[in-house]
Each structure stands twice: as structure tokens, then as C-alpha cells.
Image 1: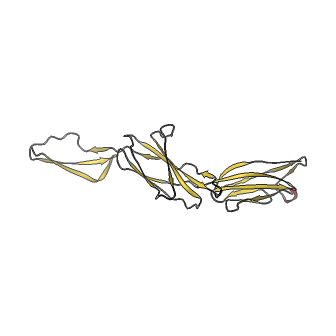
Image 2: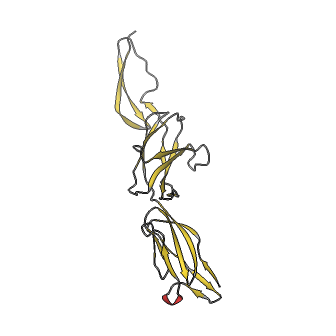
Length: 219
């Protein structure tokens, strides 16, 4: 007789459910009921649970587990990878050449690092720079040597189980880091000696914390 399972390696999100189906030939036995004689077990119920009769699995937390289906003395298995949850970023373009990034820390104990990616291309088709930020860091980083262009940035959460197997979250939303543009309210000033004039400065079209300046002609 032969025994097959509908999936041998799948990746799911936390909270997501799937149904595994086992077929035993030539007896035309399919799992899903007690009468089939097929039973299911999980190598790690804290990562993936499985209904012992129906084969319905559910992702519990980031990591990897093996689901084993048994019929008499035969067995088949499926490796289930549970992705960690996505996280978010806060981004501040502090100058033309630099930006600060803060990663929101995951509450998943299996998360070991984050991979930050940024590019001048919104679809990340080229010029993509990647930085891996370990959980031991303060989850803050400074991007340096930026060009005078708009940038786009995203992050992936990385989890690792006790066997060293890594799983990756979906990408976060894409954040835009606008080019650091300082715009004065006047572009040309002519002053007589000893006279002064006030003007305002905007950063990326918005008022700055110090938005009014005064210039004085001395000679």
C-alpha cells in the first residue's frame, strides 16, 4: 500500500489554518474521520497545533514544526513554517545625506533580527541596500551617505527556532523618505547698509521649529 499527504512543506501566518489530507492506496482511505484510521500529531504544539482526526493545522507562533500522519505502521509528514508577524517603522529624514530609523520591537520571543531595506526605487527593483539589525541592538539606526533623492524603506522580521531554522515575515508597508529640501521664503535679497530683513524657511514644504531668520547688511 502507499500513503501520500497533500502538502509536504508549507508556510503559514500566525492564526492561519489549513487542512492536510492523507490518502492510503489501494484501500481508497482518506483522512478526516475516526473511521479512516489516520491520526495526526505535531512535533511542537506551541508552534503548530493539529487536530488528530481531521488534520486541520493552525499556526500559533513563529517557528517550524513537523506534522506526522500515521496509518497502521506507515507514516508521512509535512513541515510547517509559521511566519512571524510584520512590524512597523518610524522614519525621519534629518538631512540630505542622513535619516534615522526606529523599528517597533516584536513581542514574539522567537524573533532574532530585522532586515531593513531601502532604495531610490519605489518598487525596489534596483539599488537596494540591506541592513540586518539584531534584537540585541536598540532597534535604532542611522542611514548615511544618502543621495539628494527620495528614498523608500521597508522591513522584514526574522525569527529562528531552537534548531536554527529561520522564518521571515511579509514585508512591512513601504515608507517614503522625502529628500531634505530647505526652501526660503525669498530667493534674492537686496539690502542697504545697516538695514535688515526677516524671512522664513520651510523644510520639505513645512515650517521648521526655527522658521524665522533675520539678515543684516554690515557694509
